[in-house]
Length: 213
Image 1 (tube, rainbow, N blue to C red):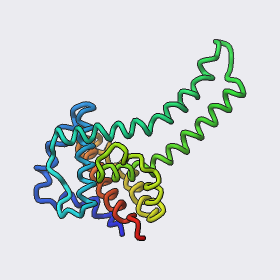
Image 2 (image 1 turned 120 degrees about the vertical axis):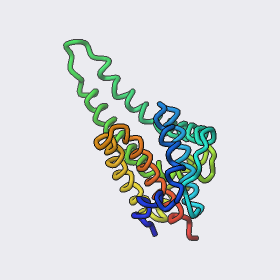
Image 3 (image 1 turned 180 degrees about the horizontal axis):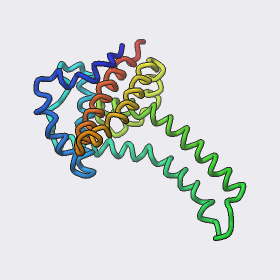
Image 4 (image 1 turned 90 degrees about the vertical axis):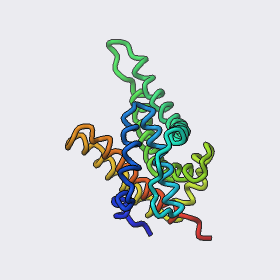
């Protein structure tokens, strides 16, 4: 059973929430490195939720979190390779044009098929990414980010749980930029909050989709 509302409030149940979050939020201001370190912190939060820690928020550890976040970045890079390949193939008809030529019928077909493939793969990633992230958080190995058979089994065990995670991701995409609208650099605060909210949902879904057999 997923407690959707708990994901929005669990941070503030921790008496030390401000002390624990102020450093990772500030670190996230650092381009690239900050985002990776925050990802590592989010991964440890997912693991704590899965392990049913009373206070899931961990203490920030820059070196450990950066290393873990970088390794998960590499996992994401591998998943992005098919999309890069399709986009590359879609650009071929455009690069073969002369100044006065239009895209040929074959080129249009390539663009349409490529677009449909990107759409289908994007939906696939939307389903797989949170499961991959949770599995990686628990097992902490590069290979654990690609256990597709395990991922599809978890989807089958509790598809509703992962749909709730996706709903949380959609809400997170709305919440994240709100900081910019309200108080400028606050976007970094709302982004961190959104990621941790999704992390809690992801941890819950991972537990809820354990094989019952």
